[in-house]
Every structure is written in C-alpha cells, then in structure tokens.
Length: 95
Image: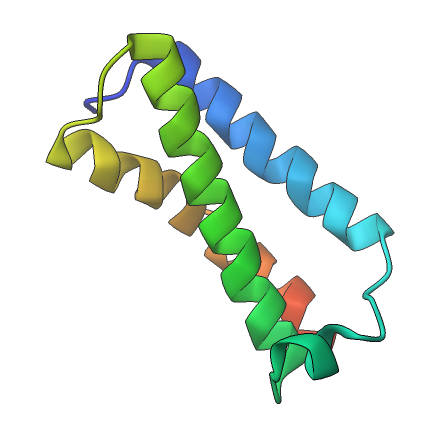
C-alpha cells in the first residue's frame, strides 16, 4: 500500500458519507433534459465516481503538497472501486 493509512481512512469515510448523502437526496427532474442523458442512473453514477476520485486527488495535493505518483493515483481510484458494488446498486435504482 502506497497511501498512508490516515489518508486512506479519511478518503474511505468521504466516499461512504457522500454516497449516503446521495441516497437521501432526490434526483432533479431536469437531469436528463439538461445533460441529454438517456440513462440517469448511469450518468449520475459516472458523475459520483468522478466526483469522488477528483475530491480525493485534490485532498491528496492539499495534504501532501504535491501531485500523486502514478501508483498513488491508482490506489486512490481503487479506494472508490472498492465500493463499486454498493455504488452501482444504488445508481441502478434511479433508472
């Protein structure tokens, strides 16, 4: 493991807490028209994953005052992927 345990713990908490927020909110009725998407669940799932990876990368830069290495970047992506089943299950219900 390349990432330090505290960063990993906090990033995992961010992912899980943000997913819970998504679960408790409602989908805007304008999503499909605004963004031209045919499948709202897939669109929002991709948005969520991008948001989590982007937030974690930004947090890494702030905490470590540098860009992540390629291995660190992959490990950050894996932190999100570790929750893929739960993320996918939730967003599939939005279709």
